[in-house]
Image 1 (cartoon, one colour):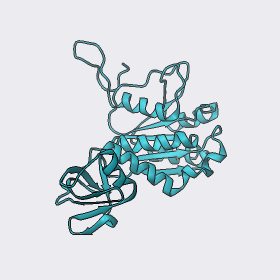
Image 2 (cartoon, helix red, strand yellow):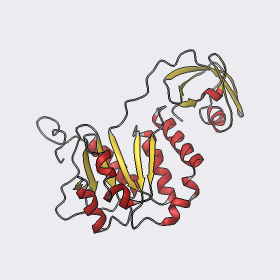
Image 3 (spheres, one colour):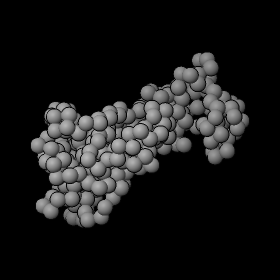
Image 4 (spheres, one colour):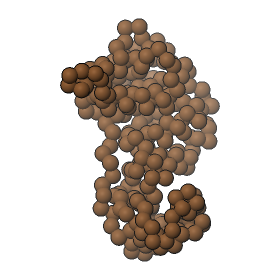
Amino acid sequence: MNLLLLTEADRISGDLFQVAGRRAEHIKCVLRAVPGGRIKAGLLGGNIGIAELRKVERNCVELVCPAFDIAPPESSEIVPVISLPRPQSFKKTLHFIASSGIKKACFITSEKVEKSYWKSGAMTPAAIEEELILGLEQGVDTILPQLEFRRSFRDFVSGGELAELSKNAEKIIAHPMNDAPPCPCGSQGTTWVAIGPEGGYTPGEVEAFLSAGYTPVTLGRHILRVEFALAYLCGRLSGCPSPGADGGKSPGKPC
């Protein structure tokens, strides 16, 4: 926990807050904080401030935060479109999305997505919010990502909705095609990124993305799990250093 996330439900009065459960236990047992100590705290959906601890017990922590005057970090301009992965991978993907500053993501179905994934406990609103909160705490952010779920590939991708949503953005699909170039280093503005299931997209699904204006790129010959593919893509699209007189290549150029 790099940030204590607070909600209005935690406010006792004025600038006095009280937390219990997991958060209190972490402050007491992991951070080993004591009364008078200071920790970074943020209002969910708002700004960040420095709070002073007044009471520290395993099941109850009281703190005062006189001002939330630090803006949350800038948002990522990457918008992932991800075929729903297996539940454990889905949880890790949510955590990365929240901790890396991604503010919009779409999870879709595709032919190689198991139908049971949509019915798993990881898909409940409470489980999703819990994982996103943990990601925000890790990334020192306060703004929850907006997630969309589409269970009809035909309606969302083939039907033109995706093309309309991403019409003014760069668009790439990470898919191993023989003539696909490497994922570029750096991007200009908003970039929508399609990531298939671990079994890959079918040829027909790839064609649907190409028809929607998506350009295929490769991440190399290694097969990555969804959460690692997303992290790899975000790193590449955020820019990466390369040898040269200028210390790096221009955005949009392969490394």
